[in-house]
Image (tube, rainbow, N blue to C red; front, top):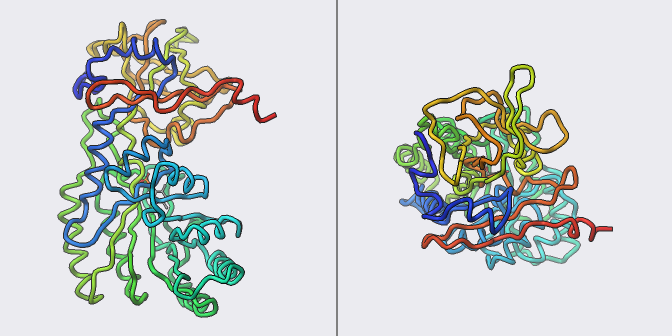
Length: 420
Ligand SMILES: *Cc1c(COP(=O)(O)O)cnc(C)c1O
């Protein structure tokens, strides 16, 4: 593919140069159309049984994006009380929030108990702490509901750092400790309303997830009267679009998932609510970053294009070695990919690891071009930092009708100074 942004008319007729003239660079630019499309798709993964897709908001907590998730009928997963507060600010009612923390202080558990947000406990000791919090707060017996996160002993993901299930990760309660769960729930008069798992992130093949669901439903049989069973997130997106990588096979996945659920429901005798927890899939493809090329150079035979998209703006390449496709825009138009040469696209942070795209075949980049980094909506802004005292970028949304709306203002040096 020569250009993804042209193939989907990403900017809806706006010239990216006009957008950055108004909002500056680096800039996160979201597409409302893609956002709503992906959120709708995940809400349809299971249609035969009661189901909710819980958008895992750590991928992107912009309140204006959360509002769109609310409109699209998604529920949400939060990993911290801060994320719960973002969800309240966006208008989510407590019933549509699921809190899945790990290793939190009693104050965070007390917050969720007080706000009646369903909470999953990630270890026996946190379950015990939750019970103690309920006692401290004199919670009525019928309100002592919670979930537990089980580590099913299997994991998968696009790189080792994102594998969250399996014998070597910090997450969840091991299957062999399930009898201990029941001892604690009895001691504190708790009811396990649901169980959840999450095996990892960014898989493009449905099979590991289907295997994990089958395995998890076997485990679920040990729990009586579950109100919900949550299979976790992890659906991947095609980060190699320009090389024609295909989408996650959602339709095929859905077809293969259904008989697995049928089999469980007939054994269990009823259908609890099924849930999944997609983060990346909902938001990744709905954003690009526009950054300016301020310098080009050749160092010992290697070509470098120096942009204002530092690792503080997008950390994934330096943190996980992640691939993000790069389009080169000149005068706001994608430069043809007919003649590609190997270049390094780097940022403006004083770190040798500040590399966005390493030894990448790209059209020859010139000073003054815009670099357009694809698929940055998930774990993009939400992982931004102010390293090198660089304020975090603004975010704008291209609405379906083509209007451009700022959905987060650019941070300023004054904002950073306010902490002193
Ligand atoms: C991060 C996370 C998710 C979302 O993962 P994606 O790969 O973005 O879909 C879901 N559940 C839990 C518990 C997580 O920590």
